[in-house]
Image 1 (tube, helix red, strand yellow):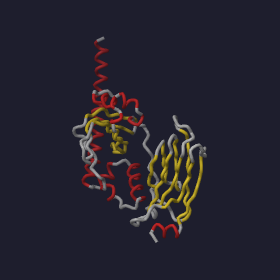
Image 2 (cartoon, helix red, strand yellow; image 1 turned 45 degrees about the horizontal axis):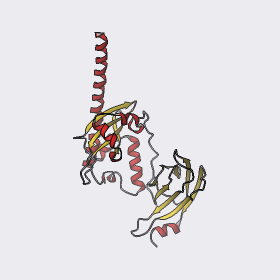
Image 3 (cartoon, one colour; image 1 turned 135 degrees about the vertical axis):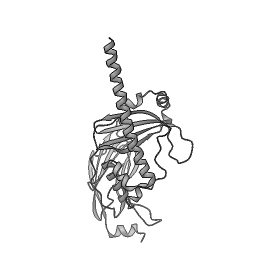
Image 4 (cartoon, one colour; image 1 turned 90 degrees about the vertical axis):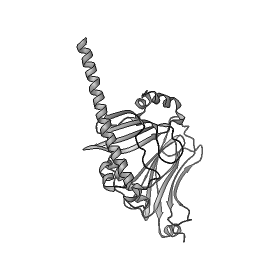
Amino acid sequence: MNRLIFLIFGALSMVCAGQAELRTALEASYNSWRSAVIRKDAATWQRVTAPHRRMEVKNLIVSEKRPFPAAVFDLPAPPPALDGLKFLEATRNGPTAKAAYFGKINFGVGGAPTDNLLVLSFVQGGTWLYDRADFVNLSALPEVRKELAAGDLKYLKETPEARPSGVVPPVPIEARSAKTIAKVYVFCPGREVQVQVNKISRHRFANAKEAEIVIGGAVDGPNEVQYSVKKLEGGTGTEAMTIRIYLLSETPGVKPIKAFEYQLAEGEAPKPFGTGHFVVDAATQKRLAGK
């Protein structure tokens, strides 16, 4: 019996040591990334950021016709510090890991911060590389806020997004700098809609009313829009729905141009898949220039 107790406590000690070692490595990665952002240190930012995330950020910036890497550091506020936050756990699944924190997460945008959840994601690249941060506002989840404050990690263990997936996302294809800035807008209550523009820019919307930048922008001549539609649990399948592509002008005062639309009135059945097109020609460019 004494030997069994010794083995159990020995195993627990190894688990705690592994957790502490992982936490130290992940926090060092995040703090290096945060410091690079604050100091506008492009070389360090490139070195400590996950490759797929670097390319996603670059693609988004050049698709908005902003300078890369300078625009990486054009943020409304610095990334939050971990100082003062309650460390909850560090978990690893193969080449991926997450670290979770609870407390008054300060984004430096004014107002008194409240107790919320911050989950940091990392991937392996020789060392742990910073991927992304997910902020969970717990104002609508008061019971979860109480649980986390008491050290109960049930919410983290039952939420797939809070667990490392074990899969490192592939590096996206590098996008060309956009000639014409474009956005995809989707309104899809009760449905999941996936949109792909020119086989490069991929978007997923679920029960949403959102717009996202088209990676690579719109090209001169024909542009292709592919979409798929799927009913979500709880949806009726009869909701109104809209998919649009807008072209954005760089001339002050000129409104966006609606280049593509697939729209359903309430009660209409959507096609599960579809392909459409729009054209950017000389007349379109003239309108975008406000002429």
